[in-house]
Image (cartoon, rainbow, N blue to C red):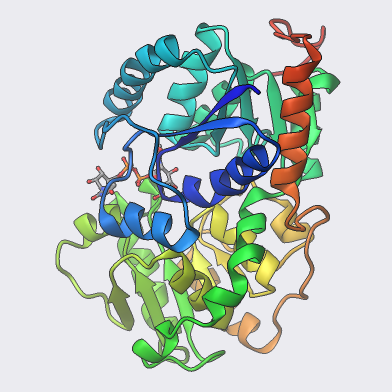
Length: 372
Ligand code: UD1
């Protein structure tokens, strides 16, 4: 059976790679879990391995934090000799973090089949590091596994070949559905004195929202106003903790980053979620919980057209007014097709069929006339 290297690096990767690993192993593939070390704190890493029952990585690259170039470069330099030594048949990367890009580049240059899970998402905001990671990772991948039809449309528009594109569904929702009962059994609400349906959950970590003090203060001002009618709890990402530098913003209960099960429980019990995360837009849609996305654009438009997400932007007045409206008139609960718990199975089937077919697309050219 083929050797498939599955890459995990940062907090949002762990719940995406687990269902793919499980489905590959259930079909007899030899799976090697590679952790790049992009996230390393217990609260950003270990708790996810524990909550999700992910086995310890077979290889840990220990690369850690740094500037974009340092982080991407360190992962590439550490991953390349591993690929040379282990000679995997395929490398599976998920999402859009720096390690996703680094490992996709190394795999492609080593001539290994590269599969990108969560392909085709586009924010069309080139100022967002993840957008660059997504576009380039897609471009060097052999197989593109999309979570939604809009992502497939993006890939078609950019000229990718039909053979490369697979509408597989959403692996993050596989993990959500697998773990929902365990998550709902968490006592996290009681621990924080929260009543289901009577609090809002906040997360903020995008550099564009937290790195500029004026932007961060404007968002915190809006949250303080909302907290007058809805208590707000915010698990704080290390990047945001560094920017707050010990400050306690008005109206917000701050907590350390939450583990996977506790965080799903916090989402499920919330009256609304206010976030700049990508994955949380998807999880709230699957849970049917209103989500206000504090960004000007989203790469996940299906959570708006077929979910509970509202793109609210960064204008404080608009944030406060939208939150007030959602309290009385929440968006309808809907969930996109193929967000059904079976995405990992579809990905494993397609990848193993491709590896077993003996053909190699190695698409070096996009469709003639394509726009990228
Ligand atoms: C990264 C991803 C982002 C993802 C986010 C989820 C990129 C470009 N960004 O952003 O897409 O949404 O992860 O969390 O890959 N730090 C710790 N402990 C850790 C990890 C990081 O304290 O375990 C601190 C470090 O000071 C580091 C900072 O957080 O400099 C930012 O970490 P980094 O991985 O560079 O980016 P994120 O903001 O986490």
